Image 1: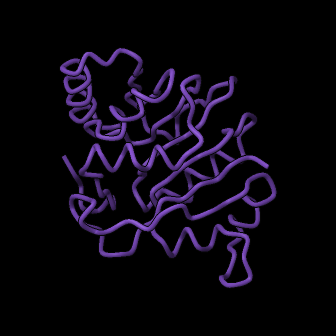
Image 2 (image 1 turned 90 degrees about the vertical axis):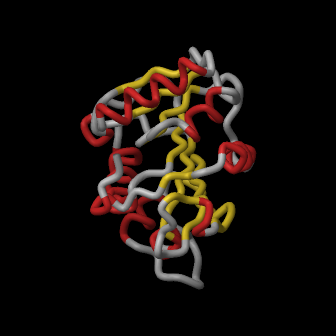
Length: 183
């Protein structure tokens, strides 16, 4: 299921997923896109907090497992899209994003979101700490070109540090829960 070359580190705890959602601005009326839904730890938690979850999962076997897991729990407000997010057409209506994306495509995902005709109201990602620091508007750290582009439209912040033991497999780099909210 997991390709080690894809820098995927899956959140283990549904309880932690709910805690992270509690540190977001997600509301019951929101439509939320989850990029790389996996087997559904975050998806399930999101489904209890928002109106609709659009779970994007490119791997067929994993998408089938996600469907089975949601069916077992009688969760019916999740739409599963079996597609690569980078090829996905973003909605024309307001939406938010909550995701634990593969680290190696985090930058491409953020570019797609903020350069789209209808960028998200806010987005929440689990990111490598070093990358997240470059997305902040601060004098303490170097702000990357993507960070400079991002802070024109969004207020950015690291909400929480995460532990390697929160994931399977544990990442070899520090990770954080990152927030970007439209200004």
